[in-house]
Length: 101
Length: 141
Image (tube, rainbow over all chains, first blue to last red; front, side, top):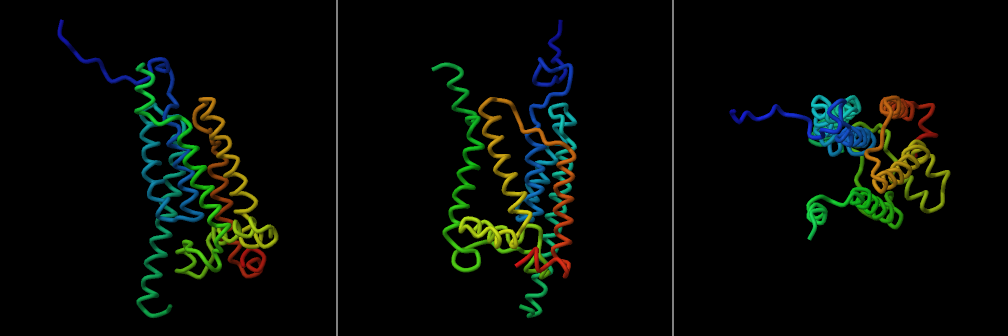
């Protein structure tokens, strides 16, 4: 009898029948960071929102989270907040260089 | 030493998250109350406002917190009505719920999808409306 490694299983055998919610906190955090990137912090919350949102979607795909769509919302909000703050920074830099301030 | 004690040393306590966030927010709130965003003190300014001259949905939030702590509710509402009536109460409620659920080991706060879409949509509407000339005098300072 050869020593064949078992196929990868979800880490919680007790919940093997359905998807686990052990990584649902990723989706909630992605949403919080995404909203913060819109309201105050732009890039500084937006990039973490993109990263955490991505992790949330991965976790959902692996059956470790049930709220991957929440991670998707955080991911999109993070992109919006980051892009707007980068555009704002570029605009501000150009205006400053042109001597408008 | 038991196995549980070893595990406790490796993973943070379940109340560490809410404790750290609560402490950081309390410290920031105290600083914003003692210092004045319109005068003394070092506060971040809005890069969107600096670049475009238009108010973002969070603009006036720190000044509103300072006014609230000084007891001037009317001025706080004019600085940023959404932060005063929505973001601050929801933030306090969310942190209280986080403490409760972490303490009782109930897992992450579930966020319904209508809320995840609705709040950003509301912020987007506020973003536009507060920059329209007829409304700007009431929604900005």
